Length: 141
Length: 141
Length: 141
Length: 141
Image (cartoon, rainbow over all chains, first blue to last red; front, side, top):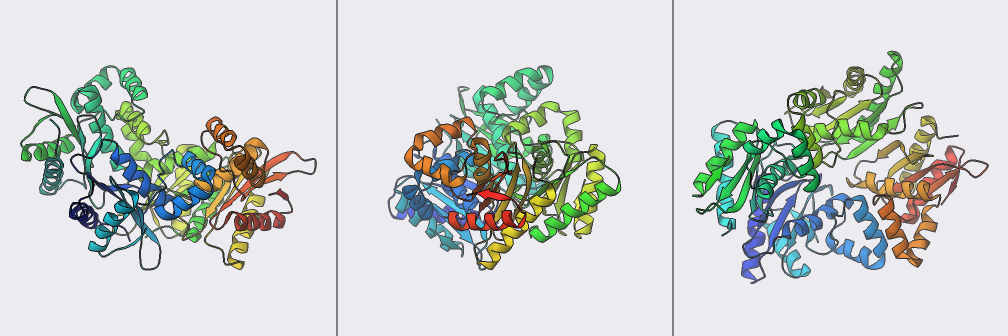
């Protein structure tokens, strides 16, 4: 199982709508497939230009390690050098904070990840979850 | 002037529709802003997983050099070492073939680029132009 | 659908057996999943130390572009600068010659790739196909 | 002296069996030779896709510095900047935690390393040692 483009679009639109509803800062949302490859991405007007990289890093680390943003942040707080090393292995593409949400199928297999950035990490995760639920998927924050 | 997310969405949707109309292989479409930063991207179901990188490389080289895909290809054919050197400067992120389309405003200033990949380079460019025209912008192939 | 470790082992063992049967030089065989990630790899005694990279490069390019080694080689011969650019995008990890074999499911979706290196490119591909057939999969040379 | 493919296979199989016996999460196991080059690797079904990089990083640092994972971790905790610098030298390929096990011959010369990842670092090291002992080799955790 993988994320279809149709599902990815739903996730992005609904995450952005949630951001408007909560009056968050301009958001950027990425959806990666089960291999960590970009399926779709949108950056709202007014977001800073580097947001693709941040959104990507949140979602990419989630897929590559099978560990969502909150768990990555805990590991980074406990063992900063471990996350630094992991970032060496993955080309500096891991951003270990909330807003990286792991997607699993019903058997628990990773089928992709969503990355949201723009507001606080916790608000980013709330927007991501709104998109994921609208697409009838289960997210792991 | 820059590309709004609304315009980027139109470009992507209409480019993908053109691909379906012409029965092209699954396409991937990226829109970059005037600074070469990702605004929006979509990869159709069935496209190979590395298509973000190829679409990005077509559009990125266009913005960074202010030269669209066809002109880059000619330069690559005339002076392969020049494009190789450019790729050293830009971190290997330039893919010098058609399907990278430059966007200019009415005064000729670069406001972004579109990158399409999935079918032949020429068909990729046709799909890109369909999206650009639907967004009332002018593309340089 | 993806390649199980059990299938990957079968592919590797049978490819190596084919190499011994044909008295090829020591071979190295890699199996990548649908996202281009390493599932399994073995290097025969006597193979040179850099064979992981070559095997990986043959299979990785196949997955990322959805194009097997023979087609990549043709494209490299027609447009050397294009393959050079693609290698920039994919971090220099593409080796565009036979021995990179694409795996598809019955609907044509890419489910992984096999990379074999050690003898001539054509013999490498023969060994790869022997492994793939033993695993009841279909390879695209 | 170096690690034969036969020995590498034994290490991997027995490490994976140990993981199943202890009901660990899905494991990935790599064996590197005395030069730090990949000899063999297997990733169990259900392991996250980035596990090759982590397993490799644990074993690679062990060979390159002649120092196993536990000693590397202590050094990282005492002098985080030193490990960061080492990772600069070795291209970000060092993951300084247990699960990277150094292999020495009877005279103490490094003949390779094993890297295991998937469960806690300590459990990863236990699985690695089970494989190493089954191959009649001596491991340094």
